[in-house]
Length: 302
Image (cartoon, rainbow, N blue to C red; front, top):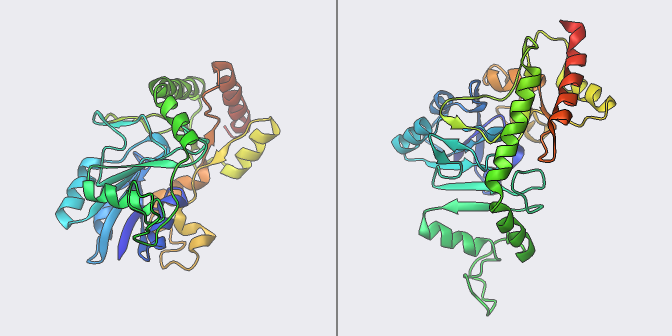
């Protein structure tokens, strides 16, 4: 079985495909959204394709209208990886609303966090009950007799984590507004530098901007790790834009490994983008300091 996944994402989107013995098929991103490209997805569908995993990268969202049509036409399962997009919306509908299944991450870096763990959403009652069994060593929900009905996993969240996450949901709108404000500050302080840009801002999507991401024209003679080093020298932490999965050592033996011509957009942006500080505690003065540092790095090349 094959499962389509964008080449630009964290490996957690693709590794579970192999956990169950299927094959990930890496597909290019749409440069307008940085998310799974519907046209490239259609070209990648084969008789072995069983599912499409779409990733809401850094808070943006793909064209779910077209992806849903593709899935329905070919009888495929659509799965939404909304790990980075809590609070985002596509055509008014919240992230996590698309596909047979969607999932969120509550890692410590996320807008809503419990330290670790995550959440799965589905409207499919049978699948929901199956997941309750799989998350607790194959026990039926409510079982107190330790009668395991299947060999499964330990994927339960602790009660303390759940309480923390529940409390944070009451502040989610506030957190999302702050993330959006941080992005607008970056936009304000970086807008006059030619050849530099930030996250996609498409009319169909209300972006929650989990990360404020800086990209630059490849004509600038600086790679992302060089920029990260220069920022670090000024006491500013940053993180790299995801390298294509097909370029990672983990997939060195994959038949699609290191083929930039097949996924040109994923390979084009990866060397020229970094995630800037995006924590909820930032003030505009902090963002201006980061922007001034970025400006100082690129000034000699202009």
